[in-house]
Length: 345
Ligand code: DAH
Image (cartoon, rainbow, N blue to C red; front, side, top):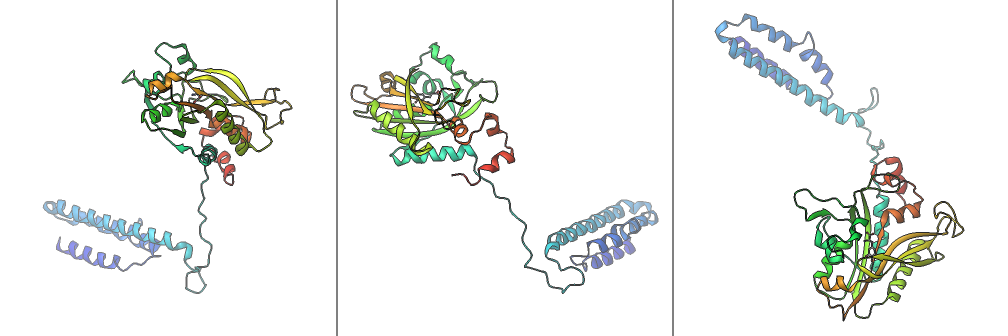
């Protein structure tokens, strides 16, 4: 035992003398098939039976010590390799070598378009508001004039949360309207970007989650003319001065009157093509004057205040803007798709 201890002690001292770059020499002398660690392990057979346990522990500990030192030497030489001088060159590392390139990420097209939409409305005095994605029935439906069993609930296939039948994943960003109006601070002039969920089969034209931007303006004497002017400004800023708009009567339970807004097709300039299905127009949003029931539900006096609201799908706008034909591309994280948007606004 005494002899073994002394030997290990000497070995440890020797091991401490190795420097970075010596990893391979170290491995051969100590850890190779004919290395000293193997040899000293062989000493076990000369140890008296009653000391075998203690000797075994000592030897194992030494083996680990040597292996650990080897890992350290290897790590140091891997790190220093890139600036080590080549054999035969002068011995200083070459610090002028180019560095490893760091790949830069880029913004997702949905974020780019969302930010652009938000910035346009901010210039008109709209403030950004956000709300929860897990919502209760009141804020997503009932307060928005969709009482229980209202057929319009079928317009939006909903994911319910199994623990509580009152909870759901919001089907639209209109829940933020309700939450903002309930705060009771008037006038309200907000823009609410966010993610929404619907129980849809995933295809090129539908997905179970997507993004919307909701707008709401409530004050005294707000009229449909204000709505039209606001959206007209948005379209011109977003798509350019030559794009035309038109409103078509529509139905939403939370607005009266309600409309859908189309813009002249960006691809064919209104001539008719496959994107606009030969009509020259593409629908981009729903809007209308906030229904008096919604104002009352949120504690706002509907005799005194009026307002307009609108909601648009960000995916839809992005698809039009960049001529993207398949919704699934937005959530597949394919770098070849995503990196095309690096230099976009
Ligand atoms: N919430 C509607 C949807 O998800 C979009 C919408 C339409 C929002 C009209 C509005 C609105 O605020 O006035 O399809």
